[in-house]
Length: 285
Image (tube, rainbow, N blue to C red; front, side):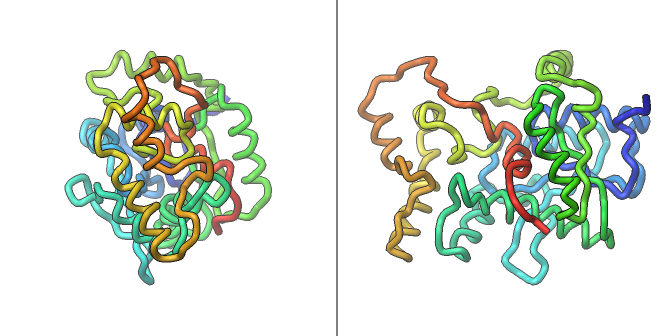
C-alpha cells in the first residue's frame, strides 16, 4: 500500500491548530524526511478568536519541526487575505468583527459564514495566489470520524471545488487514541483541554461548555456580547449567534448559578476549528 502521507502536489496542508492536524503535519514531514516539496505548503487561517494557546502551538510546531506555516487572515479588500505571523496575528477578533460588520448580521448554526469566509475562502484564495487552479486539500480527519470522512469524500466527488480532499489519517486508520499517544510522548503540546477547542467561545459549542469556559475565563464573553449588542443596534434584528440564548444570558447564568461539574453536554465541534465545519458546509468556490 502506498504511503498516505506522501502527498502529490500541488497540495495545501490545512493546519487547524489542533492536535490532530498537527499530528498529521508531523507524519507528512516524516514521510518526506523533514522537508516538504516546494508545491506542498502548510497554511493556518486565523480568525482572531483562536485561543492564545493555539497560536503558540502553531508557532511551536513550525519552529520545532522546521516547516514554514503560512499564517493567513481575511481582509475586506481586493486581495481577500493577508499573510501575518505569530507576533502580528490578530488576537481580539478583528477579522471576524470586520466580516460581521460587512455582512450586517451574525453567523449561526445554519449560516456559518465565519468558517466559509475566514478559513475556507481565505485558503482557497491563497492557493490561487500561488498560481494553482486545482490542488489537493489535505485535512486532518481521522479514521474514527467516519461520517465526516464520508462527507469530505462526497464533497470531492461532487466536483464543486477546485480542490480534492485527501485525508491521510483516515487512510492510515489513525484514531483519537493514536493522536493522544503521540502527544504524550512529545516534549511540547497544545495547552488546552479537549473540550476547550481552538475558537474560544464558538457558538457551535453547547451551553454547558460555554458556561464552563465563561466561568473559568472571566471576560472571555465580552467580545461575543459586543458583537451581539452592536448587531442589534445597527440592524434592529435579533442579535444572537444562537436563537436559544445570548452570551449575556450565559454570563448571567454563570454569575447566579452554582457550578455543576461534569455537564459538558455536546460533541466538540471546534476542537479543530474550521475543519469540521468545512466538511459540513456548502459551496466555497
